[in-house]
Image 1 (cartoon, helix red, strand yellow):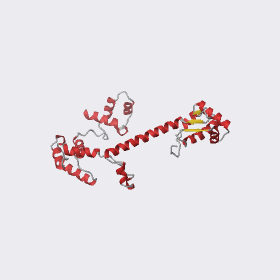
Image 2 (cartoon, rainbow, N blue to C red):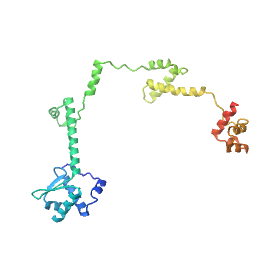
Image 3 (cartoon, one colour):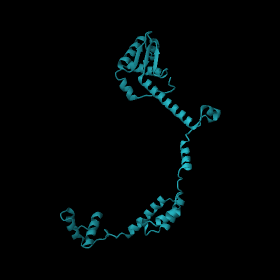
Image 4 (cartoon, helix red, strand yellow):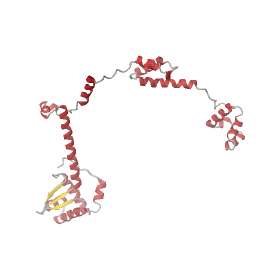
Length: 273
């Protein structure tokens, strides 16, 4: 008996495997599966033809015909023994029980390995009383490895201080023209408000964002596409000589009716002339 109160059910497999069975064989097969689920070994049951008839709720003659049909169609393995007993096997049930047994064995080996690595034996665990019955024992290897590195290896250097970070970035030519100490103070206020630590990476990101407005402020302004440049009609016809847009300009198209993208191109062209 598997100990499971439920049975795995695959509707698509059921329809495929029982497609060729008669209605009586289909109904009997689900009763037989239930009996095999409660059998030991799992998925295999041996009984007399009279007992099988009671399981499927049919006469002995009808039950014998159903078992022959299940065996002939390949749905089940049916073997008649020398004493006239009949053994029925479900290949899927036997396969799944074998997989479950293999999983249980792997879990048991893993737990035994953990106990041997931590030095916890069954006797020691039992001597602690029932209160420790559900304690999970974890391997101490990573902690031991860290201790070895600390004692015998090179200790990890401490992180740089805030003053050292500011000094190194202040000397970096990439941030020339930026008041690094002032921006660092602003970054520190933000970190305190958001419960963050001020690291070099966070301050670099802060300075990069502070540098963007400076670049935009020093960039030369382009022509205003919302201001109508004088003589734009001629520039537009020159730029788009054989288009419908040129015809619309000749017919009196106003500047405000021109699309913003075309307006920008015409403004740039007019400013360069």
